[in-house]
Amino acid sequence: MDKEIVDVLVIGAGPSGCVSSAYLKKNNINVKVVEKTKFPRLVVGESLIPRVMDHFDEAGLFPALDKMGFEKKLGARFMRGNEVCIFDFSNKFGEGWDWTWQVPRADFDNTLAQEVINKGVDLEFETEVIGIEFNGTDSITTVKNKDGKTKEIHAKFVIDSSGYGRVLPRLLDLEKPSKLSPHSAIFAHAEDINREEGEEGTLISFDIIETEVWLWVIPFSNGNTSIGIVGPTDYIEKLSENGDPTEALRKAISLSDYYVKRFGDVEFLFEPRHLKDYSCSVKSLYGNGFALTGNASEFLDPVFSSGMAFATESGMLAAKLAIRQLNGEKIDWQKEYSDYILYGVNVFTTYVKEWYTGNLQELFFHQPENPDVKRKICAVLAGYVWDKKNTFVRIHDTAVVNLANFIKAEKQKA
Ligand code: FAD
Image (cartoon, rainbow, N blue to C red; front, side, top):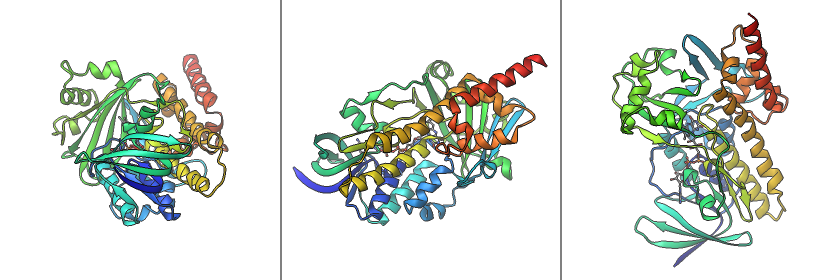
């Protein structure tokens, strides 16, 4: 069997793998990426949050993305009937980027991957990891290309950024069920023929149909818009009688008083995708000679668009720690990697859970708005979930629920 020798093998060329490999290359590490598919490929995850910009910038990937003219995302609008709550990232608490993009991921990921190649990374498409063996921190990974030919890749460290491929969680028995209740989604892209002029046409919006059910509208700069419905799995499954995703998404759109006029008659550009029980978790984020990043580790929920931010945060951190380990330092992966990443995951978990209990919705739509609370929640929604100066980060587990209970008690008194 053919054999290659590298320092670091990255599995998957999604945003997590691209940030990781670009940063490794920038630091003169001999890195190789293997990607199962041929790009461009369709993937969900189109609404970014500002924290990702720090990582694209640090990895040297920002200029190539910026040239693409993706739609700028300056905040997000949440709607419940006639109630509206708009977050503007420039009004957030603390430091950090105050804008990002909303993107068709096929084009976005392809730009990232091509830029990684331009930077000299050996990225092999249509090459799938099918097995791995560890000997201490050294590993031998078996890959298979589209012609069925296999080869071995010897590496001193492996970064698994395989997203829902979940390569190492499957091969090493690291899968663990998510603590979140089962939710599913159906989404498609449509040519946005009824798009309004100006901000209304390009604003990213989340329209609440019922407490646990919401519709996303993510307009792209290419004139198309992504529309998706999210809710408890049994609700999503009952949207159509025979499980037809097109019928289900049409039904979901008809339930949105606000968007039915704009999207009621549009043609979908591909058959809507049904993503069932999407939340996932792992027993450990690392092991001897490897780290799991992005969706190959933990995925919570699309509601606050945290997926890409964790993908790039973990991809960047895994790369930095791998470099130090290759340089002979002893790394405490539990403390420096797992504890750090899981701190942010836990903050977002609170927000996701309290979104679906309705508590967070109480805060979002409460009038008059409390500017201090709003600025702090805005920083969380921008992805700055490690900023312990922010009370809505530091005491996330009590802040949201206590404030919601207070608002509900006041409402009852009135
Ligand atoms: P991916 O982007 O999935 O990339 C992984 C790559 O690994 C793929 O290209 C795959 O082909 C490759 N691969 C898989 N198996 C193998 C193998 N055996 N060998 C080699 N390569 C392999 N996130 C957001 O930030 N914003 C959103 O609006 C958002 N919406 C979402 C909506 C839904 C319904 C769901 C389910 C998720 C959403 N997400 C969102 C999450 C987002 O999709 C992911 O967090 C993000 O794509 C993770 O990036 P990644 O690089 O970890 O994985």
